[in-house]
Amino acid sequence: MVQFRAVFLKRTVLVLAVVVAIPYLRGPLYDFPAETAFAGAELLNPYAALTDPWQRANLHAHGRVWSGLTNGRQPDAEIVRAYESLGYSVAGVSNYQRIATDDGVPTMPLYEHGYNLGKRHQLAIGARQVSWFDFPLWQTRSHQQFVIHRVAETADLVALAHPAARDAYTTADLRQLTGYHLMEVVNGPFLFEESWDAALSAGRAVWALANDDTHDLTDPRRTAVAWTMINAPSASASDIVDALRAGRAYAVSRTNEIASAVETVLGTVTVDNDTIEVTCEGEPSTFIFIGQNGVVRKSVKEALAATYTFGHDDTYIRTVIRSPRTAMFLNPVLRHPGGERPPLVARVDVGGTWRLRAGLVLAGATLALLFRDRRRPVPALPPRQVLAPADRKTA
Image: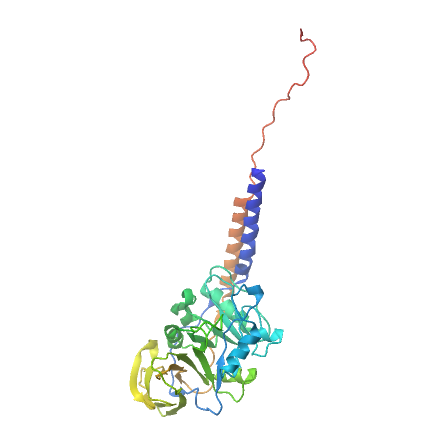
């Protein structure tokens, strides 16, 4: 019996190892484009064509699905009603590996992708179907890139969720990865400006999102504390996707530093020659202009408008507006050479990929040999005499 259990345990471990290894056999190696700061004589202003109205959106909230395994407390429909009652025109429900619109919930088609130990998750916005592929244990940078590409195949936009939570994506990763369009610069009460500046400083044109990431509407730290203002003509999925892709949005974090009945909002962002002018509507606020590597270039306090003039070393400038109630994180104005800027794309290293796969197969074969049954041969015993010899004398 003991021997049977040992054999069963070995075979179970081997089967689990094979199941876990299968995704890693599929994952290719990538060549990543060089880190190249934005450059050029022209300035790209994502807010150049603002129109009314603005849509207030939360694109990251969890309902009760998968029998409660994902910790969502309320049904999806209740989440939508709650956010709409708070004045949101886009009440997104982004359950893990589940598109709420497929269940008839009146929201945008999106979901949160990822079931790995490192909390490397992505928001699939404008999702057409769920991508089930992931690397459940460790992830190299090439693994991360492959997952981003897989999610992008069935979604209009890919956003990195809570990028630095549990060190999911390091700043070195974000300087190399490509193919994602957005990043959660604000996730509930947490800010990820360092992650955003790492990507921008390496020439990755990534726009900002702010979301609650709530799992419980009764949690005040996770409900209506972060949102994205989107300059779109309607709250339809296509209009929201178009505006987010173009960068006509900004991320908002509620701070409540000072009690105020007025909500300060973005006014305009204009560029004249090399000078940016940013205005807000509401109460006087602090304007902070931030550039390459997250360095603060200029601050203006107690104002409704502020300007900054690009210097020769400035590759991008993003603005943070700190009002009495909120902090607003504007998408950057970027240097570019004019015309259509070709996207940076990580490409598969075919030769390296097949060498890697061959090595994994060899390692798997070695593991199988180590775990194979090694039963010791049982020595043959001499025949046991059952009947007494016929010539034996008995009493």
